[in-house]
Image 1 (cartoon, helix red, strand yellow):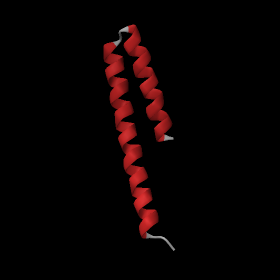
Image 2: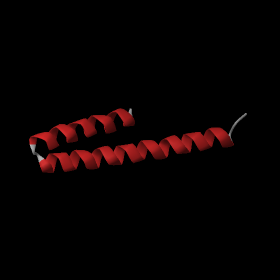
Image 3: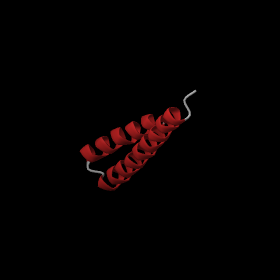
Length: 55
């Protein structure tokens, strides 16, 4: 879910950059980057939890 949101904001940023809306593009890139790092941290935490609490 978060990865899809990050990709959606990335697409919005690219489209906005093509049309010259630099403020919108910068905001969308910032949101996409934030969502991507949240997704990455959650993925690593779940991966580590799976390795630690393996039955």
